[in-house]
Image (cartoon, rainbow, N blue to C red):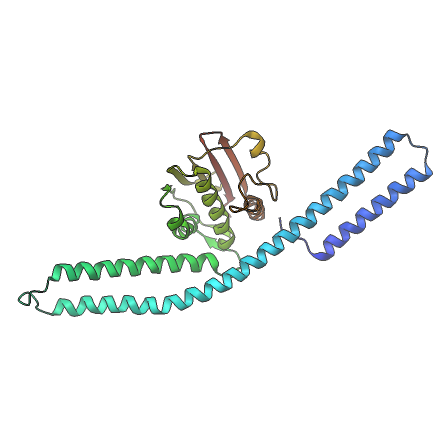
Amino acid sequence: MNPESPDALQKKIHELESKLSETVEKLQSSGIELEANEALLKLAMEDMRRIYEDLLRSQTQLTQSDKLATIGLLTAGIVHEINNPLSAVKLVFSLLETQFSKLNLSESGINMKEINEFIEQGKRCAESMTKIVTDIRMFSRSDKGITNEENVNAIIDSVIGIVWNSVKNKVSIKKEYGDVPKIHCNSQQLSQVFLNLIVNASQAIGDKYGEITIRTEYSESLVKVHIWDTGCGMTKEVMAKIFEPFYTTKGAEQGTGLGLSITHDIIKKHHGSIAVQSELGKGTTFTVALPVP
């Protein structure tokens, strides 16, 4: 759901005031029975509650958007500063490899095998850092409101690259990617969706070692992403509330209860759907379905 403008919210408040005024007039000027009066008041209170929730949700999403935009700007600057010296490091290793290959050091007692292994290890580390920088750049780029043709598999890979170091000691991630067409989407927003779902899956697994499986497929003109875990699962009562703002079963240090609410709104904005299946003690599966143009 898109955050509403102040004018739209003000209009809703005026509508509520009008309804309340009408209710008061009816109560004062008519001989309606008490039960009918209570029904009118109940309807007015329901309108007030819905408008309050809209205000709260809009305020929360605007605050969250501002925070994400600030983080994105900071991260983009850091990534840029890292990328320059990283390029120099990669160049140095390439030059070392070239120069050592020209030297005849077989009679000098220098172990060329160890040197080559050292150079190869350095090159692999530099490539790994480059991949991390690329993933972070994609995730943090400022493309608010901009949509492009994107491949969901590539977006998920970038997210995994970001979270892998924080989850690799407690979960394995199994990828079962299908041959899916590109979709018209905002890649940064979908990255946030998949980041939320993967982190939630990792937290649901807890301290024991578990597995997260990510499967993509194309069917019925939809690209579908299934993310399931071997975690603690959920009751039906919890499942019924997980997309509500501020609802959480986690401690304060692990979340505010906004992740899945924002995820749901992003998917809705992309004209898609998100569904959940879970069994207590056996794990949870989230399925995101996104339309193909």
